[in-house]
Amino acid sequence: MKPKSISLLLMMLFTLSSCQAMCNNDVYDPGEECDGIDFNDATCQSRGFDDGPLLCDDNCMIDDSHCTKCGNGVCEDVCPACVPERACRIKCKVENCSADCRIIASCVDSDGNDPSTKGTVTITYHSGEVKKVTDQCRFAHSYNPHMVTEYICNDSAVGGFSQIEIDCRDTNPDSSCYGTETDEYGNLLPLGYCQEDNNKLFGICEPLVRSSGVDVEQAFRIEGELGVKRHREWINLCQVLSDPFTPMPYYKSLIDDIISNAELQGIEIMGMEDGNYCGWLSGSDNIYVLPDRGTPEYGQFLIKWEQSWETLAITFPKIKYWEVINEPIIMGIKYVPLDTKIKMFCDMLFYAKRGIKSGNPQAKVVMGGLFKTSKLRSIYECISKEGSFADCGTYSDSTDPDDYFDIAAWHPYLWNEGPTITNFVNPNIAIHNVMMEYGDEQKPVFITEYGFNDEYIGSQELIAQYLESTYSLTSEYLPFVETFFWFKLYEEVGASDPEKFGIIYGHTTENPFEWKTAAFKYQEMSQS
Image (cartoon, rainbow, N blue to C red):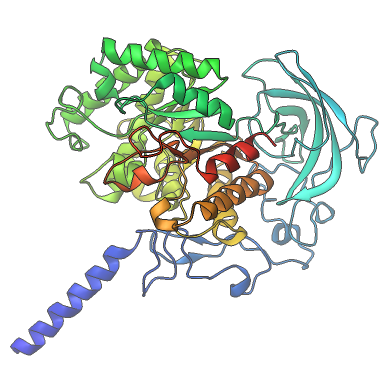
């Protein structure tokens, strides 16, 4: 072959491999139909359908199987969720499907009226507090610790979910959200879903454990003024423990102080492991390197991993939520192929949950927040041992997602764009639809990280507007989201981008503890 021809062939091969390598980077590139949640402005409507979300497969091709087309009189087409092989939550009849492809929730009120009448009901919470409620509760297929004893539809709908007014009486944290009635396929029909004054929607992130010079009492006093309900705290195994069984006294004291100050403000702590692995845990001096999956060393790592989580859960029993590996696909697990990352993440979820539940049966395990949200389907495929993930059973033979996590989590960052129905609501619904496909829709969702950088946006007033839109859209259209953790509390002086995300000026800035415009908006939203 002539040298020129060889050069041309090599150039073509290089170009092809480069294009292939860009798939699954969550950014649309030429030659792709989509990437992650970036569909290059394509929608179900632009592809000839009437409604529904687009999905993007692992080959960066658009999957429009969840798009809907209305008006043909066939229930399975009008209401795609009504299929026998899925856990159908309402009888699949055409009369139960609205013209815009929404499932109509058939409810009766306490007087037996069908359709129900609008009114105000009483909610009694476990604290004994009694409230009259008219608009704080919604119908949704989601776990809720309040046992619903009576509910009244108000005949309106938001985001496809019929709003209802509910009479709830708290029984215990393990109360079933299902009643005794079944649909025509034998599935239990769910009761309503109740939210207590926005419940725990307003969360915030701040790594107090690894920050120096921060006044913990002051931080939580500010969070209390903001109206924060849950605080996401960085608690790394290798920072807090000296071996799988021994907490370091300094960090135990510090975290105990964080917990007690949070309690004073009525704030719950969620601990989060950031994915740093020290020598006693991984056997490597590189904090980002884990033993090769399939080796004896990897099996030993998983044993130490489980023991370490059990120690954390025992040491800090007041922490009821543990997030296992922040952004595992891009940050928490490095230097291995994508499929291997997913397999290792599922292994680590399984062993972490086993350790946490052994140390504290009341604690909940939160799936490490996914930055590459398109990989949620791959995680379910791994848990189910499907296709290329058949060998996911090497270290855990369970195919039940409940053995891996109690709460799903992801990070739907928008970076330079304000949230809208198109770029925020629809992609999050599409992600949640994956949970529904695998029968996991009863689990709540935590958005464990999301925010805007001052330097990227260039306007604090605009960030405040984005914050308001984010929480409003979440509250109105995403009822499966239980807590939305804003990133983050403090801005500090530093070279890294995360330092510019705070809504309060930190102690190292020129205006320590001054509130930004977004902080006032957060307070307004949390207390409205």
